[in-house]
Length: 160
Ligand code: ADP
Image (tube, rainbow, N blue to C red; front, top):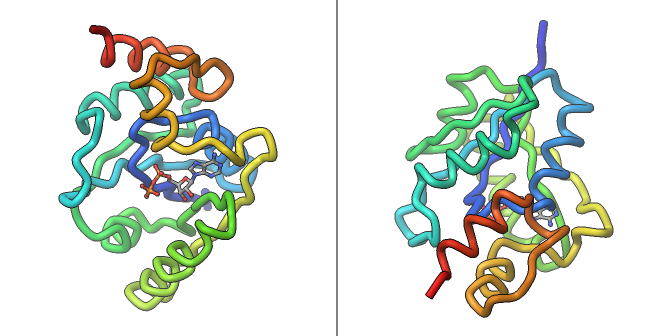
């Protein structure tokens, strides 16, 4: 039987930190669904359809990665797909509290599915979508921080 993990997030935009987590997850699971969580609270820089297109582009050579969008409860989606685990990344201690709370709540909602955490690779520990948006808005270079296609899209977005 094949194994499936779901990697949910905002991916606004996808960074090399995210890509690293997906690639490492493929070493543990047969398939990984990168799930763009639609949040009503967060107004993104990129639209859901732009983010979907970005992720499809970044992972176009990896047949074991599927990109999807879900507006509802993550654990409902995970149950529907019969996922084996949820994958999340951890950078600093500051990520821990929120992630711990989310994982505990998700476990309560669906006890059969665990959340597993991967430590960031040391070369990406400082990379966040939030900082990427800020640097891009100020015209800074993002080589080796986001995939080349994302750097291009960011430049287009902030073109004056
Ligand atoms: P959210 O808005 O739900 O935090 P993100 O798109 O920012 O979603 O991130 C999705 C997941 O990827 C989170 O678990 C986050 O901690 C993790 N992540 C983001 N950037 C990195 C990175 N540079 N290294 C490791 N994990 C990361």
